[in-house]
Image (cartoon, rainbow, N blue to C red; front, side, top):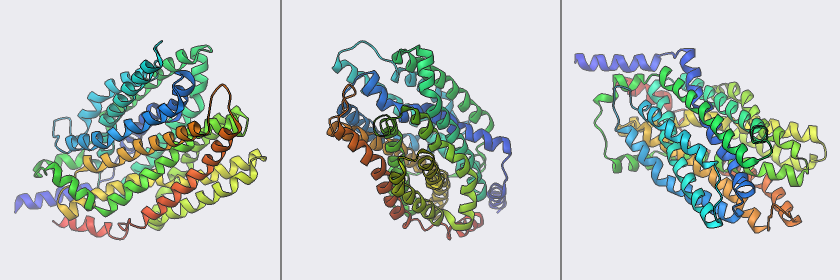
Length: 457
């Protein structure tokens, strides 16, 4: 009885715990690191392969898909390892500490070119891209699983998610606004050298940021409760996850969100160069995609508090869809085109912050239904959705470019037309699918009861 009383008190203290501001901002450094490094991969690797390494667009698109399909097996495995880890350093931090250096090294090698045959270039691209994706999972899956181990308080989770959004936005703004400038400056006109040196700078920045996370973010819930849990079999964990409807809906929502983002990021460079015929718009549109998140970050917790995750995201996506429907009418009016694009992304970006809370609440739901939290496995689904979604979006761009006969040396009118259609159609289509996925997420009203019952157990 004494042990049970002590356990309940520990859980209640964790539920009511307010995190320090320094811990919240430190947690955001993880997304800053992830998006400085993976942002370069997501935004510029397609261009690097087709225009710098000179790998055919169709081969690049296939590479993106094959590499990310492998993640369907890698991410759950890493999540399973996280769920079964219990060390003095904690459950998630050992993966971050020992994974970040190999990840940084392989990240640099991904943007390194050698004088190889066409087949040799493609093999090298496959090896480096697959390995860097695996190492990204080794670091990022535990980082995401860290949030529900820090707190069970919904409000605190929303704030942590906001700091993640700020870190994500800051990293992506920096990458999208400064990458090509750094490539040209450091490479002195040689993009092969420029991408190599730029990736080195970003790797060091990412390593430092993840060290901040490890030093300042504490796994409170693990220390007081998880060590007493009976570890579940992997097969049971995956079976329960697939029966966890809020989690499945969240993963579907996240997947199509990142297909949308991946396609927009990949196609924007080509859209500015060949449709708008204004390369100067690249450092405007790409950064604005992420600058909008600085407005979305404080807006998201307010929307979630008022409407809940489901309604808040549906409202945001409807506004986003409307923006992309009317943008083609104002291509000739640059300020208005940019303004509509910016407003659309402010509301369309609510999901990038909300998804972290949705996954974290799904962890609570999993414990409530099945008696196991399995943060690692459940967050691995989000990591998978992130990478595969971005890859599918980028691959779609690559396949359309190949289908329309895109050739960097001689861009045809059919290729320009394909780029123009893709730029608007993919975001609208993916947003509609996201709304459909949200209709299955019915956890907003139930979550307070879940937390109450978990605390009373």
